[in-house]
Structures are given as structure tokens and as C-alpha cells.
Image 1 (cartoon, rainbow, N blue to C red):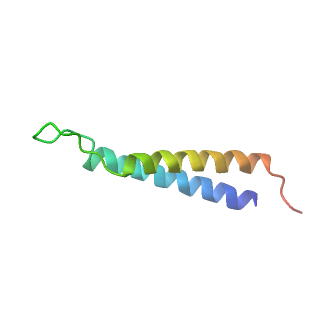
Image 2: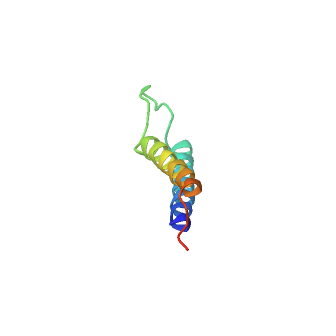
Length: 66
């Protein structure tokens, strides 16, 4: 269980960083009409980051089976 939580947390954090990086590169600015361009990547990266941190925190709390 610990290994699964750590793997889920790590993968989630990597996806959160990738989503945030994609947002910074391709979106997040003003177009020629002054309209803010945003995508689904911002809420997705926040959700994945929170999920990853929770999974990693739980992996340190949960006792492993023997």
C-alpha cells in the first residue's frame, strides 16, 4: 500500500508539473483583443498537485503489511 501511494503521488506530481508547464508555454497571456487566454491546465495542475501531496503524506502515515 505504501508503494502504491508513493507511486501515485509521484506520478501525480509529475503530471501536475507537466500540466503547469504546458499552461505557461502555450496559454496564460493576453491575446490581441485583451482577452485572458486560459485553459483547463490550471485547475488540472492544482488538483493533481493536491492529490499527489495527499498520497505522499498518506504513504508516510500508513503502516505497511508484513
